[in-house]
Each structure stands twice: as C-alpha cells, then as structure tokens.
Image 1 (tube, helix red, strand yellow):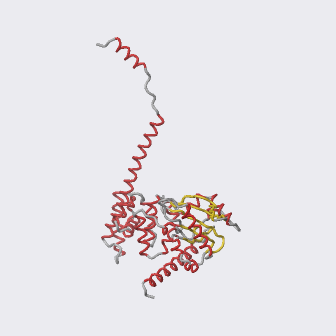
Image 2 (cartoon, one colour; image 1 turned 90 degrees about the horizontal axis):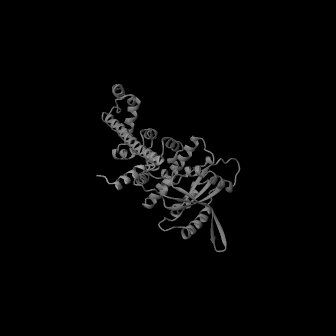
Image 3 (cartoon, helix red, strand yellow; image 1 turned 90 degrees about the vertical axis):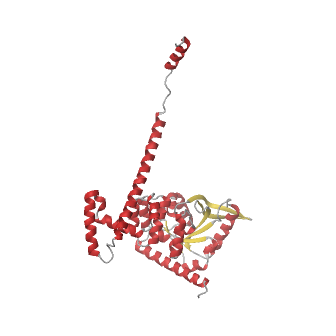
Length: 365
C-alpha cells in the first residue's frame, strides 16, 4: 500500500520537467560516428579494390600473354575482357586489364602493395604507373603514403618533377633504394627533404628585385613557399639576430624541420653561388648549434638558396661534411623540356662524381 508521503513524492517527481537534451551535441556525436564508419568502409573498399586489381594483373601475367605472343595475347585479353564486362561491368575493359597487368608488373611485392593500398587509391596508382623509372615510382608512392597526397597533388608533384629535384635522385641506385627503405620505415633524411632547383613562381616576382624583396615575398606567400619546400618545415624567424662580441649578424630565414628534428638556416643570394658563402653559413650554423639547439635535436643544417650555382665550385667545397646544401631557385617555371634537360645533366654529373669518389676510396684510381 502506498503511503501519503510516498504519493506526494511520486507526484513531485512526475511534475518535474525532463532533463533538457543537448540536441546540437547529440547531432554532432551522431555525425562523427556515421562519418567515421563511412571512412572505415571506404578504406576497406579501396584496399580491397586495389588488391583485386593487383591479383587480376598477376593472374594474367602468369599466362605470359605479352611475351613474344602479341597478337595471340591481345585476342585472349579482348575475349576475357568482353566476358568479364558482361558479368561485372565496365571496370574490366581491355584497357583496364592492361593497366592491371602493368600494375602487377611494376609492383611485384604483394606486401608492399598491401601496405600502400590502405592509403593510396587505385587512381593514385594509375597516376604513378606511366613513370618509367621504378625508383621514381616507389618514391612517389611512398611520399603519397607518408604525406597523404590527393590525386591532384600527386599529379602536380609528378608534373613538377619532384623526384628529379630531390637530392635523392642524384645518388646511385643502391643509395636511392636504401633511402626508400628509410621512407618505408618512417625515417626521413636530408636526401629526401632538400631539392635543387626550387621553383618559386608562387612568389610573383618579376623584373629586378632585391634580396629583401625576395625575403618579403617568401613571407607574404608563406603557404606557397612551404608547399614547394616540402612537408615538415615550420617557420621560426626572419633576420634572426646573432650577437657575437661587439657585432650583430642576421640570418635571412630560420626554419625547423619536424621530421629531421633540426633547425634549417636559409641564406638568400641574388647572385651566383660563391665559395665565400660557405664560410658565412658555417659561422651561422656554429652559433645556432651553441645557442639555439634544444635537447634531443640534431645539429642545425644550412641551405644557400642562390640564383645559380656552378657544379664544380660546389663540388670542391665538400659541403656534405659541413651539413650545408646549395640550391638554385627559379622565380618562373622554365619550359618543361629545358627543365628536364638541366635536371638530367645535373643528376648524371652528380652520379659520375660520386662514382669517381667511390673508386678513389677503393684505391682503384
């Protein structure tokens, strides 16, 4: 039996208004749940589709349809394509099957493809496939994975010849392969960070301009400059003052690179590279190492960004032992054929010099 006191308590409870629901918060949480689930589904679907393309390509490769049996291979592939299209749709055209074969041929390691497919779509791989140099293909695939490039960004990086402009490309195949191994292991080195030349057409500089104009344009267009410099760079200071004795010195630009865990000093030069620039940069790096290097950081590294550089002068300066890089900058994108020729010559020269040094070290010359 309910007492009078209990009846009053029930009546008061019933009279109290229900707790107010935070509709905006509830909706936000539900959206996050749905979007997260959709993303996971999309990732699984993309991975599954990419691996399917690889397995189809590998299965077709086993039939050796392309080796010495061109006409026969084309006929078989056309017949298989027609039958697959009838059953599974337009994703299995003759051209699509050909691309799958090229994909399996270019990427024979299933474990690597499986890892890449969790972050690269089939569309990414289609952009990379036309690249003839297998090391360049691997470079773009790994950079895509690490930096989460979209297809548009990847296309732009390839068009801007990013691989050819990295210090990595100027090494031997063995060194490049080792550096790609570092990338897969999540280790970033200066070889994959620094480029030559840098294309700074984003700055909008025309005609005559001063070093201060160049510096101001970089700061004004910082987003575009950092995109060209590559991922990992963070701006620290402009005209960094360094007091030594009774004099003050000023470094043009100071950055920090998150992956390298080291300060990056940049000096801008409107003129051609001069060996005297090296002594100035060494002085700045010693000061930064003594006064600005934080615990756990690597020693600072310097870059002399100049209008042009003579390869033999740079070679004689032995900059690798000094943690200094020299790169040219271009305020306008040259014709692609000219850029390709320049980069090819620079890469060949660098590799020849590396081979000479190696033979000398081995005592063969």
